[in-house]
Length: 472
Image 1 (tube, one colour):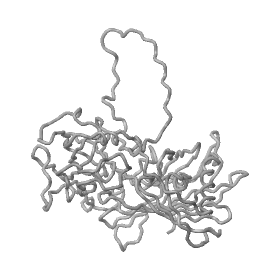
Image 2: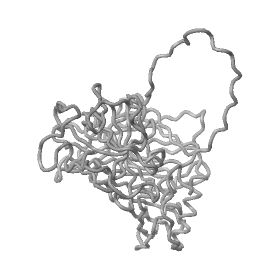
Image 3: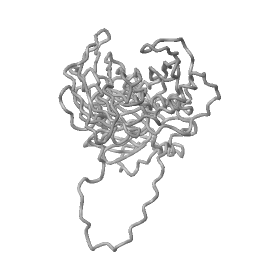
Image 4: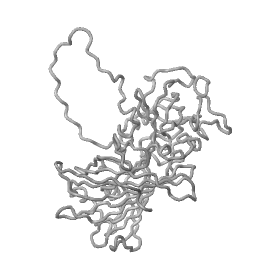
């Protein structure tokens, strides 16, 4: 099965901490919602998880609370974790996916990928409460986690309990990599997770000289996502078929270019409130060999050190072709339904609605300490004359009840841009929206791409930072 190498999607890094004036105590804990007694049928790629319980006796109706009451769950050892502000202890269960010195990753029953940093007093025990070592935990084993969400939105685990040994199917699922976070998507202080940060000189007598081993042949980069159920054969609408061909040719013909990306960020804190402007994030964008790099990153006129990914708040990716390529990829299995005619940027278009199932989706949504590949639906506006997509709207569907966001949407507008002697369809505006579950807080980004030029490594690209927020 041929898939895209990278997922597209949205991320909200420390979305709560970046909202001025919000009382952290008003933020409900997330991530510890009910754990169903069985895996939802059909939600996991076929052949990777067996039917049955997960694991028995661990359903928690409310985050960090006993069924039917408001008493916090006891920690291993009989104590409860001191809390401050909204740092209420919660629990969740899952199977172990990765385990390192500073961090471990689990997959919950609803297929969220959740990562936890360990507290200084982190403890590991067995079902009887006896302390055990890290070697006892193997990929695929079933566990229960006691944790809090800190004031930066990250999960910090105080205790981990081994509850059941993995099955062969559990181990096969836990060995996969396709849905795990990359190093850049993890908290900054755990990206370098090794036993020691200090080098040492070899002790004792010199080691005997050995011939250096031959460099092994590098394996091709593959996507180890399990194959979903076979698709039902279905002929495309002629307009969709032509748009598919245009989208597939899009990335192969797109030259290297540079542009100035400007993102105005807004927040709405109550259902009836107007959107309030937070700031503007700008960066020089270079697109080369299918990858985006950023430099001269600023918030307002202040230069930012580090990566664009480390800036707190909502961000999106995929505007430069990967979203369209994913939707039109035959392996995605998107179903298109023809709609009415419409005008976009003065051009005649035809609307098509579409839907993509979760087991074929590359739409990755990330919170500070967890992520989820979501099913989605949306609408395309296809230009009648050129068969190119002029606008794309997309909405996540079926988000788990325990996931921090209950609404995630994206939209992109494309226009024909001239780069030297040729014209290319490129994004000019995009919007990303998410809303925090069980609150009235929503965040919206409005991004523009301007000053496109063909990129050459020796050329110097300069853009002026913004003086003020754009007018709403």
